Image (cartoon, rainbow, N blue to C red; front, side, top):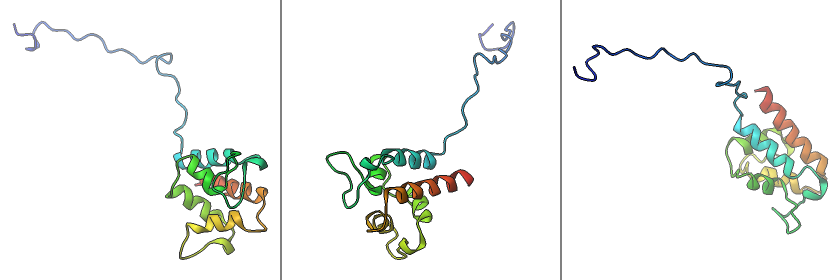
Length: 127
């Protein structure tokens, strides 16, 4: 008798899954949402946010610097923030400079920047 001719061979009973072996898994994480939250956290304190500079020696960052720090260089994460911008800051031809224009505008405050992130995060959660 050959080992694989199925004669005289009996399969072991199937294991039934156990809740101890297969715990409830967390819901899948939206990578865009995760990066938006991570970038916002980097500039959450006023002393961690700045204008003009991508990042400074003291650790302060602009919007762009916060995005770079979480490895965002374009794509849906940047677009989510651009879509949350007040319309007067959306540069139709060069959309990527819109975030820098907003961050560095004389009237833009730290609270405005956090609000931008909050709007983008809320829109992503609602999607």
